[in-house]
Length: 380
Image 1: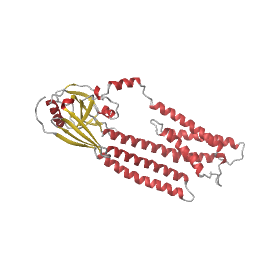
Image 2: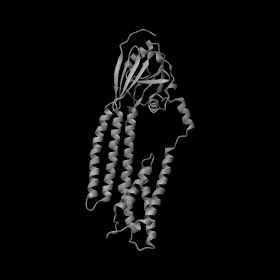
Image 3: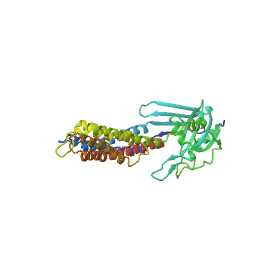
Image 4: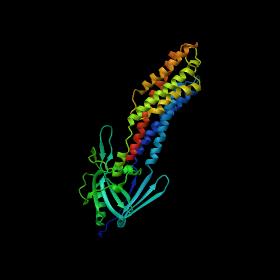
């Protein structure tokens, strides 16, 4: 090892606050919408006479936005979880990782004489928006030390990276370089699935990085790195076809809706009391067991899945209408009941317009926001 003396390099890494501030603004808007929709739902629920359908729709939307609010709070807490203090001195690299919620600390000490090798690769952060594919350029320094232990250090400035490389080079530590993008595997490693001990590179003199760090570029020119063990497991384990799974559940949900509609058409609808306009008198049991349950079935079973057809609510409307109408008509052949086919159609239309259409849209919005938050949390 060389005896060149260097000033210690110290710093603190904090969670970026831009995303947190944006989420808080969005959360305030959702709180206002939640108050308005839930307040309106309660108002129409307690009014005389109660407007069951309008109240149920507003409460359903309000509960959806309440779920979004709790989801945003969860992500904000998770994003603000850690703060890291680090120091590179003449003995090695030292790091203190603090959990901002619990106050606990995790110390990492990497003395120079424990480091086997250092590999520098690319750290491409996806900053794509809409249809513009953009990446923010960075570098990963992977320290292999001790007994198969790994330490990651991120860089977004060329000069800073070269300063660190000079320190390690002066200590005689072998340097290697890989042209792969290490970020996807790094994110997987946080979930204990990527083994960076398999990472290899070519001998490197610590000069001439392939890109300028800290810039936004179009596209990602570097292929992602993937451990050999993960490639082998991918070959052994067949990929689940999400589209096929969705098709199966679309069909199953249609069957469930039809069977349930037939049961209601025989056992409930012909015997439900009607008013002078031949409209069902809908009590709380009818609202919950017929109206609300019919709305929730496709939402719970299939609407949240990927690759669902946009016209699925229309198909289910036709299935439910047939399932209700045929039994009601059949019962009317043997029992003196009021003409209910128009009533059945009107009721099913309410389920379609005030339940499945807003439910389908809201579920897709909720899922999109969830993936947006999760994706941006991973990118940080």
